[in-house]
Amino acid sequence: MKTNTISLALVISFLLAACGATPSWQTFTSDKGKFTVEMPATPKESTQSVDTALGKIELTLYTAQVGTSAYLATFSDYPDVMSKADPAKVLDGAMNGAVTNVSGKILSSSDITINGNPGKEFSAEGKITNPGDGSVRGRIYLVKTRLYQLIVVGLKDQIPTADADRYLQSFKLN
Image (cartoon, rainbow, N blue to C red):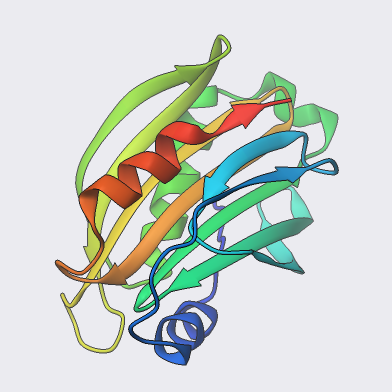
């Protein structure tokens, strides 16, 4: 299943918009998305329509930027037919779509869960301004017919590991 998440232009614009900022960690709650996550800055909300194998799906995106790193939390609701899909294929498709959006390659991935729901954790390298200069870490969860994606993207070796860990590990369903 093909699921594209964020456009390369969007990622680049967030990465190049600010440099040198320091994190101001805060708990962010999305009532609409039914989740809570710690983010290093106040996120901006946007929506976009994404083409998938099931048709157009609305993606809600929250983005916080610190320096050359962007922290993205997204969710999208799929039709009920998604509940019959193979969760592993859905998660792999979402992971591959996210990495493809930065012309990247997956370095590692593993299966995870949240509240008994399946997920995937991954790291990748990709193109932010030049091939191989970007780093991507993420977690994707499938909760019934809702897909959650948490992604940290930035210039290679400039995303503090502790910050990426804090962000990814703080995600909670409400």
